[in-house]
Every structure is written in C-alpha cells, then in structure tokens.
Length: 213
Image 1 (cartoon, one colour):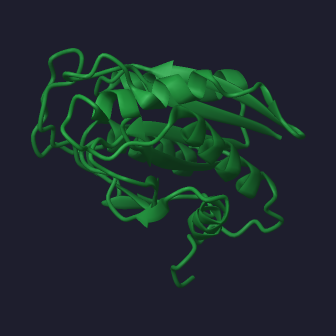
Image 2: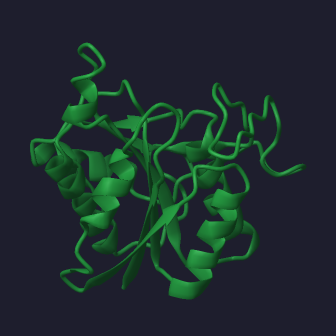
C-alpha cells in the first residue's frame, strides 16, 4: 500500500508550520506501507491543484492532509469537510474569500474516509492527546480536505482520505503566552499511528464511523 501525506507552508504571522515540519520528518516506509510526502501552498485554489497533481503522480491508497490549528491542545482528526471558504486572514497570495463555495453546486459536506474513532483510540492508547473533531474550520485546511474528498467522490478514486489538525510546537507556544502545544516527535508519532490504523483495515465500508449507513 501507499500513503500520501501533505503538509502546509507557514502562513500568517508564523515562521514555521508544524504540519510541514512533521511531514518532512516522516520515513519513506512504515512497515509494508510506502509513504510519499508533499508540502502544498497555503493558498486557496492552488492548494487543491497541488494536491490533485500529487495524487495523480503517486497513486496512493491513503491520503492524509495535515495542517495547523493553533489553539488546539490535541491531535484533531477531522470528521467532516464543508463546502465553504470563509477566511479570517488572507492566504499566502493575499486572497481572503468570504462565504464562498469551494465547489459551486457541490455537496454541502463530505465525511472522511478514515477510521477516525479507531485512530483516536490508538492515539490515546499511545499516550497522545487526541479527539475526533467535527469542524475543520473554513480556511485552507478545510479547503484542501473538501477538495480531496470531492476529487475522490467525483473521480471515483480508489483511496481513503482524511485530515488531521495539529497544535503549535512548543517553540511557537513560548511566544504566545500559554497557548497549548505538542512536541514535534509526538506529532510525527501521531501521524504514523493514524497511517498504521488505516493501513490495517480489512473492511471496505465507505460509511464514516459513528454514522448510520
């Protein structure tokens, strides 16, 4: 099997992005799983184009997007992506869409294809703070998550996709007066656990965990 894991460039006032740093530290193999990594621009539109190109190039079975959610204290596995861009700050190209659909006429939302509850249980068992999150926000993280699931659905791609939000690094939190943080090694470990849990799946159920089919 093959996994594609993506991170983001730094954005806003932050000089580093934990998602980028963690993704770049992943090994190329995890047991029988081959891992490809890409860093996508923190830019509406271009981020989805970069993701699509990476999927075409790598042909993955699993796609995990990773992004920063400053202020969160846990590894947050996202359950749902919504069809709206509503930016509190400009992206790295200066775009700041307000109340705009990601895909005009597209579904209001998509659920993740990853086994989020099983993955969160495994993360907690490993001693890592983790939650199932029901909001991926409305910035470029949600934009990419929705774009991933829309590509998967409309092109009938044989892959399972999802998104993980990670906290600040301690070096960032030190400048933010008590903001929660997580060590880079723990973030990397968390990504690896999520990939292992999904790679070990023996089912082919599209219905998200916790939903009624």
